[in-house]
Amino acid sequence: MKQKILTGLGWALFLLLLAGVCYKSNPTISKGGESVRVICMNTKEDADATLIYHEGAAVMIDTGTKEDAEHIMEMLKRCNVEKLDYMILSHGDSDHIGGAAQILESIPVTYVVESGYEKADEEMEELNRLLEQKGIPVLYPVHTQHLRAGEIQLLVYPPLEKNYRDSNNYSLAVLAKHGNVNMMFAGDALKKRTEELLLIDWPKIDLYKVAHHGRGNVMTEELFDRLKPEYAVVTANQADEQILRAAERNGTAVFYTGERDVIFQSDGKKLNVED
Picture (cartoon, rainbow, N blue to C red):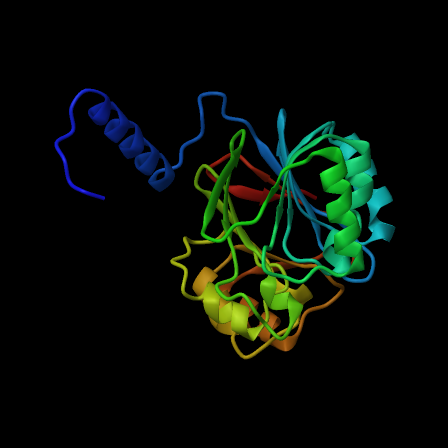
């Protein structure tokens, strides 16, 4: 961009941009101070489904399998969630997108976010046809995408390459922020994608949804040590030794969605686990 002197409208635009930068750098809770709940849902077959919400705003990150849809809908009803601002599908595997169609048929969804380079299989193509039929916009991030739903700030990190041997490496990673509380969701990142995630300057993480259902790879412990989470959620009944070793080293409490719904609450300053 050519340099020029800012006058009138130019200064106004500059100040607006500066305010936006400051906002992203120093997230604060609005005067309303909404409490945010995070529900990592009990699923079948080691599937992923997480709801983040407060009154008037809601986000889902992955939607489990088709068999999980009934439980997800029950939970949305119980939480009085009548609309999703964003449905983020980390990648196209059936244990991450299976419940999406039933959710889309049941409640309004403003935007769906998908990984853009991944080749769609039959289930994903069917889902995309439904999205087109309903006229729901789909976002395909190619750079870090900044989104917001009420008090919930989202940074969506897309994969850095267009082609991977394993579909899990197409996983979108999501940093969900509520005030000073940081929650990171790594999809099913394998070694290659984990190496990419290590390039990001992560803040101290309060909640880490462990990549790939708690299965380890040679980069697993390095990422865990970088995040230093207070809590970790494994979307399975157990985790590999690398996860358990890193959790013990970092003093991290580990929970498993193969056993039950795991629920957290944030006041914007601290994240607490609900009994």
